[in-house]
Image (tube, rainbow, N blue to C red):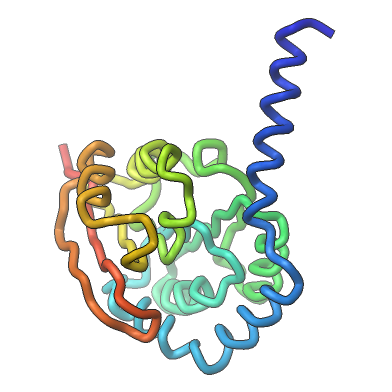
Length: 207
């Protein structure tokens, strides 16, 4: 085996190890589904309603996790003839979201990094990011935002909710979006059931 092959194997092993930190335990899955499909479900319904989706869009749910938010996106898009793409790097969560949305024929599931998934650049009307970006190492966030921005069609929107006080501040959000070529529509700090959060909306400018 040559040095190049050895370096590739080492990089693959390191990437696999880095992914492992996102794998849920059985307890985490049970708690997330138990709450997200019952008492916290109205919170996700209100969040999705606030995104002002028409229902006929193609929407990318980045970091879909268990699907407790995705199912409300799927319901909104089903009524309007839209389509949902659920993206996650965790095999465990991907298995869960497939079960959660097993009855949805207008949903596709993508396991892997956003830079690698088979979703064409410029093909998505909206990207939804709910409590995901703050869990990504700061050094990786610019690449993620750039990839998400490229997936958007001109005029498409990136819709984000992130907790405050978790290592992701307003100034970084502005910088990440600006460097990814996104134009700011709004960025507000507000209180909700999940605590104090940043609600942000950006758009990919039309030519």
